[in-house]
Image (cartoon, rainbow, N blue to C red; front, side, top):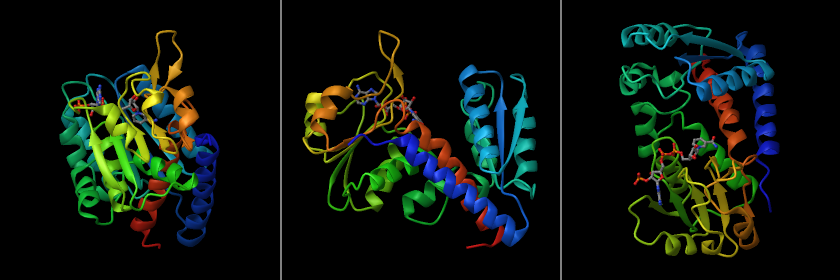
Length: 283
Ligand code: NDP
């Protein structure tokens, strides 16, 4: 089974559009997401534009704040504090990376936890780690939805996450643990990655190296979620997993592109709905 992230993301967006209408009807308020971009990193420009467009398509407010590269940290912190108390804004996203003179930790610390729709701040990261309610990071939520939509059994399954970043690897490992998988977290110092992959019923690859996980390592019948977005030597967009041989062995696998990618924005919108409901006292 090829897991169709585009179709599943469209389903999530339709759920969000429906929720926007319900919130408007019940509270007379349109959920809103503020997006802050500092500087002119071309990839960030594309990402933020895509996020604003996605907001508009679901009927949600999307407010873009573009600041110059030279913006002092204090000015960015002042904007974050202003948005923290702005009643039209239920979610705030600061597009990373930030210019070098700004500490992303300071900025994430300043963000109100109930509006931290990326779930990267210390409050929400701690809530995930301790199993408390909070906003979970978007890509990991998208991955969990892909696993559910592909009827992947998690309870008691051996799950291997390759990559231990704060935005993908670590949080997705926690979400898998919450669902009672037996979780292994691999990284650049893992001794025998091929053996770890070979034992995994569920494989989540979040490394950022073109096709570094060989298809022949994949356990027959496994579910493979490929988070990586890389260009191979021929300039083609590929994942972290060598797709054709992996697809022969896996029960279900995500393609790149069209797998995890579309889920991230869909869950950013979904998190904004969750945040708006909590702030408006709706259940
Ligand atoms: P990071 O660069 O932050 O982390 C990469 C991780 O991979 C690190 O933990 C690193 O280990 C590990 N790693 C590096 N080399 C190896 C190796 N040879 N064997 C095993 N592990 C290794 O990446 P991100 O988590 O931010 O992103 C990972 C990929 O996912 C990227 O391609 C990115 O573009 C993509 N991505 C896609 C998203 C989407 O929406 N589809 C969203 C976010 C990311 P160590 O810690 O030891 O250095």
